[in-house]
Image (cartoon, rainbow, N blue to C red):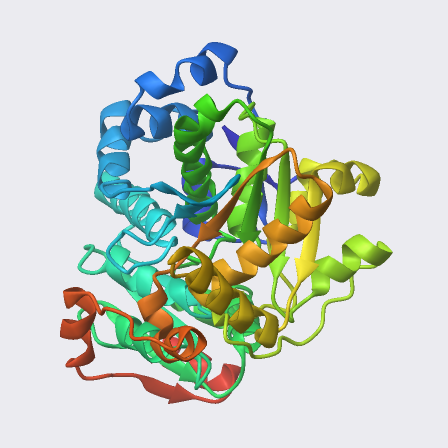
Length: 431
């Protein structure tokens, strides 16, 4: 499979180099030259297949022969070794729980798949050492730190915005040590992401270090997120109804992967991008004017992104056709007060506990279904509610049971380096 830059189609790359580079040299995101449809028989028989078989069939064409099938299956096996249940919440509404992995967040899948892929390329001997440079608005950092922990030949440098991630999220990315370094940035997520992108284009840095990114801009982080939707469809097929997925959206990698799965033939009829107060895409759908704004801080912090990188991939999937996009893709935005109310109401009415991101997903789904009542709707629970303990407990006026893994984490000592600007990051990378 070849990939091209969305900034310049004349620049192409194989899977390995796209993973290693992260971004194309012209700063563009990589996109597959061909999206191959899976046969109808695959979907008809999906309930007879296990997670490994489904994942392998979904992603093998994007990897090609660059990772042998046996190695690819081994990577997948380590990537999806936990549950992805669809839980019925109320009539015609379910939630897809994506928080059963080691860091209790949906990003565990992409991080583990990318770590396995990079680890294989290093073992091949084509590269000796690589630095994974990543910005996080919350869950990416912990997932990447866990996924790459102890992988030989890889150093991980994580930038996160000071005071803008939850306490548990911060512990997950600052307490592991070994090959993981956390840089605490005096700014917001957009500042962190801008620094990462700048470092990739800084020849002084790239002469000294081989860099790659583990944000969803990297194809090895982005592509495996489509697994969720295949797993969910396997559980929902017997409902025999039109399906709509509401995805809490920040950098738009998750929903973009779902749209890619749909393009491959997965029978999902509609997608909702559910946003918090960072409403760039919501406003685009209303005005056809893409006007990124500085991100604002919310209680659903993993979605605090003012200029979502992956939206350009979504536009490509719809061939830049605005009217076509609006037929199968909706976007709604909700403020913190509505998010808190949703957490309270869902818990009071059903006993189901949502995190702030899942609550935004629920709100987007309800808004869509108000005008489309014949659908079966699924909102994604992208993180365990315990990761936002204070917010959730205040919203539901009740205590949340804390998993043992989180109790152990809270006793660990935070270790991070403070940086204020790009020059501080550059100084660290050159040191």
